[in-house]
Amino acid sequence: MTPAAPPPEADRQRVAPRLDPAQLDALVARALAEDLGDGDVTVAVTVPAEARALARIRQKAPGVVYGLELAERTFRALDPDVRIARRVEEGRWREEGGPVLEIEGRAGALLSAERTALNFLGRLSGIATLTARCVRALEGTGARVLDTRKTTPGLRMLEKAAVYAGGGVNHRIGLFDEVLIKENHAAAAGGVNVAVRRAKAAYPHLPVEVEVRDFAELDEALAAGAPRIMLDNMDLATMREAVARVGGRASLEASGGVTLETLREIGSTGVDFISVGALTHSAPALDLSLILEPLP
Image (tube, rainbow, N blue to C red; front, top):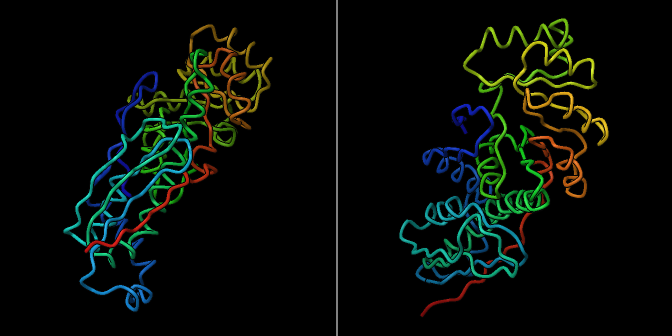
């Protein structure tokens, strides 16, 4: 999907990613074509063409549902006349699970769309759920959860929208909306200080962040006026000292080896943000099911 970046914000405010309806429809069409090929042969031999049914999707595990629009577009792609009722509010944690969607339409279309719709919904809800768990783990620390670019190719905006739905904050959308100077960039430029100064001069309208590995690089970043600094793979004691050294002169992001179990300790060091690649590269799908009820 063509990226549509939120406006730059000095402290990374939560801004909902914008999703293009036409691109959502194109994504649905590709996914259905992948699954259907020349046609659903099982439906062809088991479901009368005129048969109608009511499909009920349920959430079977604790978590946050996200992706209803994509699921709905999937069913409508095969039966434009389906009637759909939402039974859950996106972005809300549900401990007990429960009803998600009710879809009434041609039975064959509902069955042919089932797996694609559930794949979208389970994947995106899984990301929202893991994000919500991370947000909960950080409550009271002042630190916020960031996503990364470790996304499924072609699904970045949707996966970042799922992070937003789970209560997280979106990091840069791509390589175009923020200067993020990593270790290799700094080496190619001739050092952290040089890289930061060049970035600020060339792109004064964009956020600039630089990765540092030790206090020497941290001091270079501060001397160059870096507004955002990423603390790369630092232990807790080192992060605490880094927070003290910076003293509020830049916002700090912790990165590297972060897990749900270590989040709270990292947040307690005083950093502003913690980036978690697992939100989009390792989130387990939320358990959902669809049960079909034939209609007279």
